Image (cartoon, rainbow, N blue to C red; front, side, top):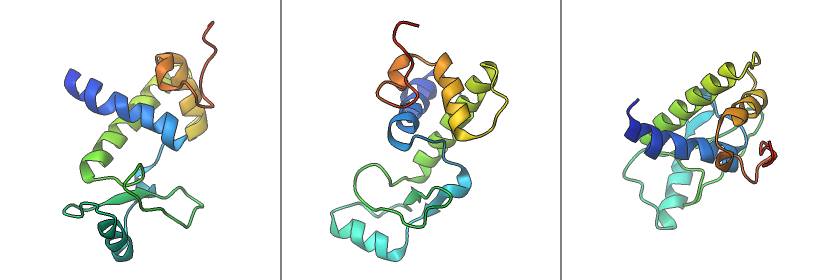
Length: 128
């Protein structure tokens, strides 16, 4: 991974994982949106020239379509998987033996600058 990828692709995506998702999406939770969702997104002025995906967490049947967070391109998915891999690495280095998303995010938060977790349930005390 190049420094450019790290600072402009992966680290912003790590922040999105903490602040927007609150869990680490697995590849199996990423699905292409339906024809109806493409049509709805297009009617909102969205660009449908590329395949679009959304994250549907396990146990959740509904997905949303908007021009905000939630729709991903294949490039976004690549960034998301790199960020997930980095979080797993930081958690492992921090001593995390668990594989569940909540534990990985909590352990990785100990190694990341606090700006990534500020305002989330994984934020650490500023005094430590």
